[in-house]
Image (cartoon, rainbow, N blue to C red; front, side):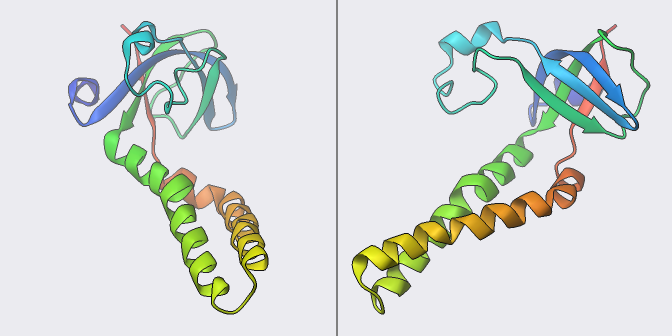
Length: 143
């Protein structure tokens, strides 16, 4: 498991186990001191000042509350998350707008294009368990 932390295809972030519920471990991510100099900090959710909490289901080891750990995330998962959260909805919105504008007045096509995002994000919400299985996050104990 230590090879995950040293791999260039992963992001590693330190944190503290905040709570344990069933087969899930909740890790509060520590503020990152490198975020201030990062060029992508405006797009990154981890660089915000408030504490972030990540749920890891079925961890490979047992943990205790307030234990310091490292969260390991594969880089490819980040690209998939950006696709499903931002890129695909943009493509969907644009396609609906172009198609609807040929049949409806401009204002109705715009409302329909924006309205199509409501069922899309509702579908994402209801398929949350599917995405939890696809987006595996590992947690490592610090020695």
